[in-house]
Image (cartoon, rainbow, N blue to C red; front, top):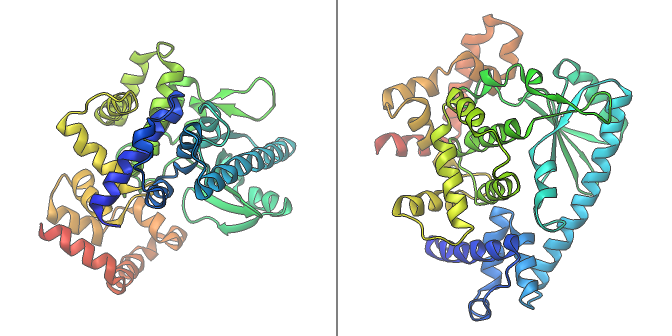
Length: 368
């Protein structure tokens, strides 16, 4: 699909999302002009297909692709809820502390079941028991997709249950001050009242973590429109109920206060159908063209912007000889001994040299 076509269908997606989350029936004249196959493709990119399906159905349109996506989302949400309850019960029995993360909470704040599609469920757990948690998950019938490579371990159980068990929220390889701020995350948590080992964030800290998580993606590969929907849903639920002074102070510590402000203001205007400024339109286009999980081109641009303040020489130094905390994430075996650091740098150079697509993208951005 051409970029202009993608943008046009994304505008329709946003309009229908506005209708869906605000309980408004779409305008019939606009609905009749939709290119449903192309709209479906764009919605899939942003994981907003089920949300848009609800809006289409409210206008009397039942398209097979959209209806199936909505029904699959409902089914997956139910299955994930059921499986998550079993996992948390098992963690209780094993005396392992835990906290369900963002998506598992957000989905219940959307107006209807399945409106927020879920790719997986994330659970923060006691990082000192990572290997034992793997034994527990395997015992419960999951297969392990990856283990010990980053700050989460991925598990799958047919037909649709994907779980990521996090030992920490961020790593040292993530941009900015995210890792340091959340290094002792348990000190920021509140004990659940109805169980022995479950925890949760206070509302303000939930929002701060959500913004930090979105910033991690925004400043890397990019992030899609659903992030703005989540922001709007949160603010509608908690408006006038939050300690905004506390939130502002913590965001300043994280150095993401400006990002939060522009993100929140864009979401508020976009889903209230207010006129956007030229700067906001440009920012929205970044979300639209990034899709849900971002694109490689953004990663190179953002590393230049956020990690090396636009210095091309600094960027080359960062790519060739990244700091140790980044090296430990990209080459996990270096953790075994500091004597392996030189070998890890050589490995990265060789690995990067044979990845022609990556090298080409780096060269293109540096030459600009």
